[in-house]
Image 1 (cartoon, rainbow, N blue to C red):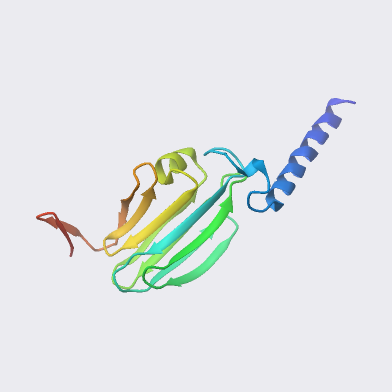
Image 2 (image 1 turned 180 degrees about the horizontal axis):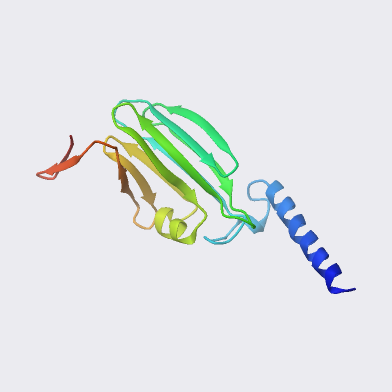
Length: 166
């Protein structure tokens, strides 16, 4: 057996693993359990939560090869999807949230990058929450939502430990 035959067999094995892995359901394989940021074939969950005081939130998210379509979220509801990281490329999802009173915020909802996963989301869940003040990301290490982006054209003022949007 020459080196070309060995190379072809290696490629076939990698493709077979990729195909089989993408067809496994939740918790059917240890391949998807106990994996960390930077490890491939890990399942992640992303959510955008409407925490506005009293308005509909429009959410439109797209992956590299997937459009999740426009979603209209009532107050205190969310839009959630799951994804798996890939072996040959990095997976990312970009979202746009639109609020009639606040405008539009565009952001990276998920990036298959250890810095984003370890220090952004922290874990296998990326939870984004909109409020009247802006967009927040849940950071599991801090156990709190951390402010990321404000609504365009709106300013937040702090007066005697009370936050007011102007």
